[in-house]
Every structure is written in structure tokens, then in C-alpha cells.
Amino acid sequence: MALEQALRDKIIASVERGFDEQISYTQELIRFRSVRGDEYVVQDRVFNELRSRGYAMERFDMDQGAIERHPGGSPFSEAHSRAPIVVGTHRPWSETGRSLILQAHVDVVPAGPESLWTHPPFDPVIEGDWLYGRGGADMKAGHAANLHALDALRRIGFQPAATVYVQSVVEEESTGNGALMTHLRGYKAEAVLIPEPEDEKLVRANVGVIWFQVEVRGLPVHVREMGTGANAIDAAYRVIGELRKIEADWNAQRHGRPHFEREEHPINLNIGKIEGGDWESSVPAWCRIGCRISIYPGVNAADAAREIKDRIAKFALADPFLSNIPPSVTFHGFHTEGYMLEPGSDAEQILAGAHQAATGKELQSFMTAGYLDTRVYALYDRIPALCYGPYSENIHGFNERVSVASLKRITTTIALFIAEWCGLEPIVL
Ligand code: ZN
Image (cartoon, rainbow, N blue to C red):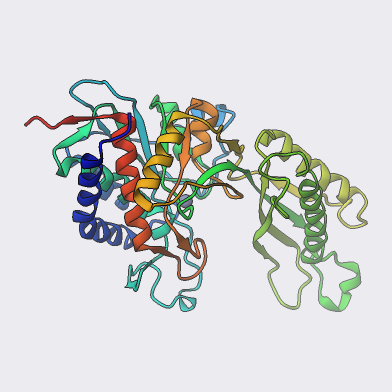
């Protein structure tokens, strides 16, 4: 049942009233340098913030064994975060509505050279309509929007008439194991909303992602005998050439795949890291490249990983140097599958109505070619998994920024969505 106009107006005004506070909370979160493995303090901050609202709190660790046994689990490595997952639970007086998970991640990708930023990356400066900072758009602003959407309802004397879990996870930028852990822990609801920076659009389809590392070994000699020493860095270039062929082949397979066939280049291979060699005048004996590639929804991550391994092995056999010392391929991060959001769910319809009320525009959906935690809820809980959030620019780049006006609009959408999906009940003190 659609919300009455008067109630809708009250909710919109209430988001507005709490907005300054929401922005300063977002800025405070950006100040935490919560790169992979360093999310402990920001999770403490989030824990306290949720607890101060009276939510039932739980904080738990990753269960490595359980994650690795699950088909959606990604392998652990030395770099894997050990920071806890935080969940705050709202329980209504009477459970008459539909339950909901509001999820966000607090891990952020590295800032890169700070000299390339206009403002220091963890200094949350506002200029015009833009709030700058690493991890602001992606996605501390989203976490704050979840929380403040609930606050907006509370400010006018209401709370959701259904259980709502506010989840704050880590490892979204590297494995997706944080979201999977909430599933393994037993948290389940009838829908999930994740406000990633999606330009006020709803994600209809999303790729899976695989991380892998290729290590090439060579034979170190002095450069004057270069002809006899195998150069591991040169050999790694040849391996990259073969990886580009895999990428081209996978892109050629887009035909006949809904949401992908009209994209020019839906599958992206990123050579994200390279290291190797010890000395300018020694032929390098080793080279390691860190890679990320995406896969279509419906493609099994293990099958794709096997194809990568087999193709590199086959290529190495035909290469005079690599055939003697075959490169090793290890999978050390994302090992995840994509998903598609089936159109026509009640959840989507309510989100579209809320979006229309908040923005005056029709809700559009699109395919996004990066990993999203929504896949856990779509694939393993099989619930409507809505990924929808604010306008942003330069996420994962320099001068990452999120639109403040858009943030207000999507917070309004979320508040209206909660009100209608969960229903409301008066807060009785
Ligand atoms: Zn994100």
C-alpha cells in the first residue's frame, strides 16, 4: 500500500532536518584510513553509533573454514582482513511488515600517490556539491544514508514494523567474504538494499570477479650475457599478451547475453600490480603480476579460473623459455559470480515509487561491470537484492567524490522505501 502523501512529506522533511548531522557523520567516517586490514577502528565507531540507537548489536569474525567451503567463498591470503563484521538489529514491537537488510562496506581501496589528490584523500572536504575523500562515495556515504534513513523515521515517531538488520562489512573490495560471512552467520531477510554509488540507478546485472597472480621465474645473469639469461619481466609481458587474448575471447562471448550483448567491452582484465627483478644490471629472475578479470553472471568462478590456468599452461608450452619454467598461477582474492536482478519484484516496485517521490524521475536500471556484495543475497539467499545509491565520480581514482544533493535524494528514497516495505509502527516509550 502506497504511503499517504502527508506521511511521505513528513519523511522527506525529516531527512532534510537530519541531513547536516548525516554529512558530518559521513565526514567523520572518511577520516578513518580503513584500507584492507585496517578497518578495526571504523568498525568500532560504527558499532557504537548503532548501539547508541538501541539496536541489538553483534560483532563477529570471519570463519575462514566455513567461507572456503562455500561455493561463493574467496580464498584467503596474508592480506585478508581480520577486522570484525558489525550488525545492528532493529526488532519491532509487532512483526507485521517485511524484513530488510541495509548493508554497506567500510573497507576502502588504497589512495595511491597523495600528491595526485587536490585535497589529502582522508580529509573530507566539501566544495560546492561535492564531498571529497577516499571511500566517501564507495561507500561510507551509503552506510550513513542507511542509518540516517532509519533516523529520519524515528525523528517523526516511527520505526519499521519488521526486523531490519544494519550490516557493516569489510573485504568488499578484495574478496566479498564479509557479505558472505553475514549469510553464513545466519542473517536473512526478505530483501536487501546496498547504497553503492550507482548514479541513482538500480543495478540490473553485475559481473563476477576473479583475482589471480601469475609468477614467472627466470635465470639471473649479468646483462653482458643477456642472451643466455631468461628475462622474467620480458616473459611476463608475453603472458600478459595471452591474458589479453582471453579477455578478447570472453568479450566475444557477450552475444546472446541479456544486459551484456549491447556493451562494447563488458569484460575487463586489469593488470593491477607488477613487481619483479632485483637490480638494473641483472637480468630479472622473477616477475609477479596481479590481475583482475570479470565473468558473466551464470559463469561458474571455478570453471573460469580453470580456463585461465589451462590457457596460461598451454601458452607456456609453446614458449621456448616458459616451457622450461612454467609460470605459476594462484588465486588469492575475489572468486565470485555475477547475478541478475529479476524485474518485477515488489521490492523493486516500491523502490521505484520511492525514487520517483524523492527525485521526480523514473528509476532506471543498468548493468555494472564491477563486483558487488549484492551477489551474496541474490545468489545464496535468493531475495530481491537492490543496489542503488548516489552520484559519484572517480571512485577508486584520485579525487573520489560524492554529490551531496544526490546523497540527500537517495537517503529520502531509502527512508520512503523502508516505510513502505517494512511498514511503520509508532515508537512507544
Ligand atoms: Zn563499494
